[in-house]
Amino acid sequence: MPRSGVTGADTARSVRPMMTRAVLHTLGPHHAGDPGRRAERLLGDGLPVPERLHARLVAALAARGWPALRTAADRLLAADPLLADLARCGDLPQLLARVGLVEPWFHAGHRTRRELRDDSTLTVRHLPSLGRAPGPSESLLVCALDVVGTAAVTGRTARVAVSADGAAGRPEEVLRSGASRVAGWRLRWSDGPAAPDPHPLDAVRAHFARDPARPWRLPTTAALLDLAPRTLQRGLAAAGTSFQAQLLAVRLSVAGHLTARTALPLADIAATAGFTDHAHLTRRFHAHYGCPPSEFRRAGHH
Image (cartoon, rainbow, N blue to C red):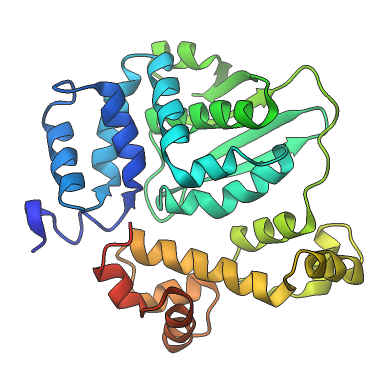
């Protein structure tokens, strides 16, 4: 049995350690009780923090109000290299295209669906993936990350409306109301020009990440982007890559996060990520990560 009494079921779905560290840091010492001490032990032992334990810590943080969630989001954005890289995106479309690739490394049990309209309105839905629906506190922490992250890229702070229990309100109102379910939120900017289209490379990767097991073909993908196949091909070539290379890269990224952050059988991971079978996954995985998936999981790449 792993150290600290953690079972395989406990670690079936976990969150990125930096997320829990940011929450614990914001809570401060001696303020998280037994859940906080358990999380500290796991992090100290280099073990993943189960999503349910992380959810309890976020709920304790949310009890302090929206500013506390914003503070944790600020800390996470400043400390985590993956998020720091996102903050260097040139515009919102580029940011949103890359979020889909990074998001699975933070939380295997949740995902978001984002839509940016020309009137500078971002609509976000927070959805379950491989597990239970996210709690309201967890959703509002992701909302805070969206607010902080988009402000870092645009230089503008959005107005936020959260959809909770069938009604809309500001985050602080939703917290005070004790909402049982947050379906999503809307960020709106009142000034600035319409957002430009994302680079073909970012747009293609975003489509792949949403459904990596789909039998993607260049002509159908180009049609989704309202591009001619040759135009898409030239855009990818100008970025020093190709359609197939990016499809493989995204599938390996998905396989990597599922291997590290879940206890799913490798055959299921292969099917979910778009590989033919377990052997195909293992061969490609070893070439990319330098070890087979089983060793990658044992080494604790979380």
